[in-house]
Image (cartoon, rainbow, N blue to C red; front, side, top):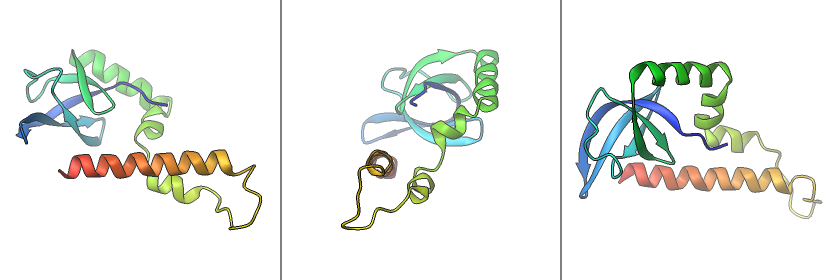
Length: 124
């Protein structure tokens, strides 16, 4: 699942000509691009989807949404450790029948690839 999640801006800086923010999503902190909301300020809340701040949000709405997402387990699903998830996938030995394990393995590989991409993007 890929949710648009509200978060609070902790810090704003410009990196390589791009305005970026450090955003807290109820305890999970991520780097977010501010290209669509260049005037967003520290302390404000925003809705973030795939690493981009898309809309300004009031604090009460943000907190209610974060509480709801947390109660439904959606924050763990959205921000869970993809490396841990990939490690928990069954290992398919070379030469064995991969048909039953293929979708899960493909998902784990896609998750790991996405995590590598995110790590490279954040590390720049």
